[in-house]
Length: 244
Image (cartoon, rainbow, N blue to C red; front, top):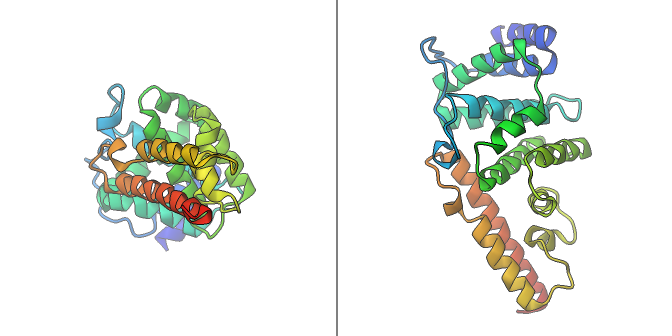
């Protein structure tokens, strides 16, 4: 009952962002502590300058809500994906605190992807922003497929995050498969020589190696490991095609 009421209230007060938070707050995330105003600062060890408590989490949740409603449909599987991430990362109590704070913030401010990304650009390393795109694609794929509207929205966010087009296409290829997926992941053309292939693999393996994402956050580590595996898989696929 609480889940339904929270969702309805959220919808009418804040449109889609509030409806999403209504779902989060009413879907089994128990034990909210009023004394806990924010969760831990994810990626604190990768910031360029000090980030105030909960800023990263709130901005990440805002980007999540933008992607979830990109195709005009609020998918429960996508919301589950985000909810599970925050619960896994912070625990139920702190995740609930983050959602509650997000809800309060969005009563006063409209969510702006450009403003959020400007904030993140000033405080996070490039590798972290690549990981954010990987996470956003994971949300989009949670319902079984990534729609064109979701791709366009994530591409827009990538632009605001100052992520190179080739890097965006590489990450997209990990979720949207095609005949030349392996080449896109390694950011090379099919006409690339074997030496160029090896060089591209070394470059991408270094860029996406989990050690580049230096954090104790298990969820972030997992995402980095997934990207690294996709790079290895792409390289092995092309090697097999070429009989190397």
